[in-house]
Image 1: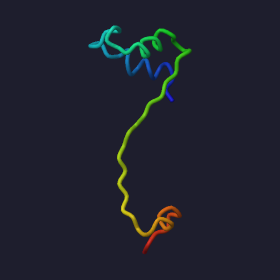
Image 2 (image 1 turned 120 degrees about the horizontal axis):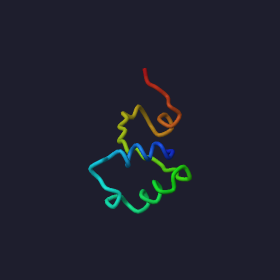
Image 3 (image 1 turned 90 degrees about the horizontal axis):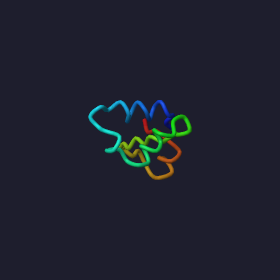
Image 4 (image 1 turned 90 degrees about the vertical axis):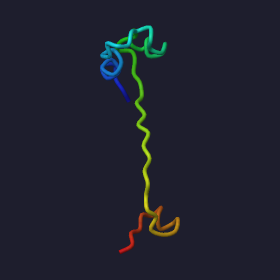
Length: 64
């Protein structure tokens, strides 16, 4: 969850982008000030080596 200062740091700090270039939702959020909050989503790809069947994986059993 992002607070207003976090959003301000991410979007208003870019001097190359003008406020007209921003999406209307972000522009409205920056205008609202402290009444605004947002979410940050980090998309990653996690690969795991499976050690056994479904139940062994779900219950986190390890093979030695």
